[in-house]
Length: 95
Length: 181
Image (cartoon, rainbow over all chains, first blue to last red):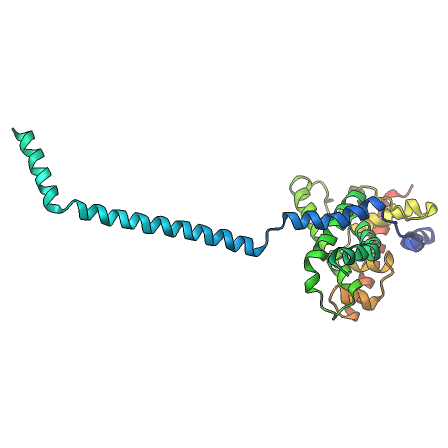
């Protein structure tokens, strides 16, 4: 029983004289250089906003253009003209 | 002083502390190196958030501990799916024998064997107990600073360390019985 208690006690105290592990020069340099890598890969918020604004602008231009052309198309072909085309077409078929 | 130089100085001053905390928490030298690097990137990215309410050392320790715990959780999540059943004994207790042997490079030769067993037992402690124990035993951080790092009261830290030691005794006792010849 005493042996067990002693063993537990000495195991718990086994870290008492532990020495700190020194960090290698290479790792330190790697850490120092890592901030450049992280800065390169980091996208700034202004860049994100710029891309978002460009996409919105592009979509708006497309919508305006589509709207403009669809109105223009309706103007150029009036309903009367359409009726004439239909009549001529059906007459030809009946004949 | 420019950013580059300031960061270099920070690495010189604190890298050893951070690295040793990582070694104690992660018990794996390669993981400790990777996480140390991650911690310094986090420090660099969040340096504006540092308020002088706490000391710089406390703030860096806090980031280190959180990053280590985050890493352990991520690693455990990956492991859990495959070996969940095998690490539990029929009584539901996690066995010490299932943890790999970690030899801390700073441990004295005569304490090597006992150190391996103790690190296995430390791994079985709940997160907070493990953190408090590692900071106190390995890093010799004072109770007051541990309280600041872990954002707890002093009495809570005392209680955590008391329970950590109690649980370690329990785990070591079970281990002793199993390995007694």
